[in-house]
Image (cartoon, rainbow, N blue to C red; front, side, top):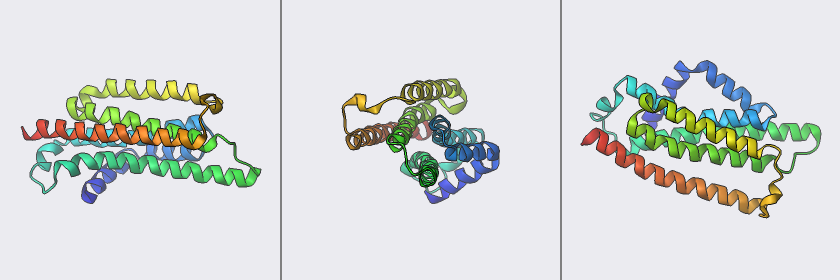
Length: 202
């Protein structure tokens, strides 16, 4: 799987240098809204990799290589997790630096970042099976619509919201968000494997 990740990373870095740079800049800017765009773009990396695979007819070539369906499909999910994780760590790092300078960190800062990250990975879990099924080129508008609507609604609702209205302790809210994200991605991964197997090997 490492070879597949290196292939996708090389392709994305070569083709989207400017957007990657913008993503990294947004990750360290002290704005939850810009972080939202950054993390959602990071979650789009697997879709971008799939788009280049389609153009290169990669699936036909991959069938001749010693990679299993688990590795081919799993590499796309793993790329999304790694990309979102990098943005998350950069943002947390910048938040702690600002907190050290200002002497405090807003109480809801970390939980807001975690909630946005979880939503981005849930949207990835929805998008990837669709892209494996109908293809990125055909599903591009649907993919953009799902991503933009999900991001806009969530960011609008979350920005400035008093999270205490949920009447749930922060640790339980974060745990619930992680659990939902894991469940969605496990289900999504199983669906994507079935779709890919049927599409390529049937």
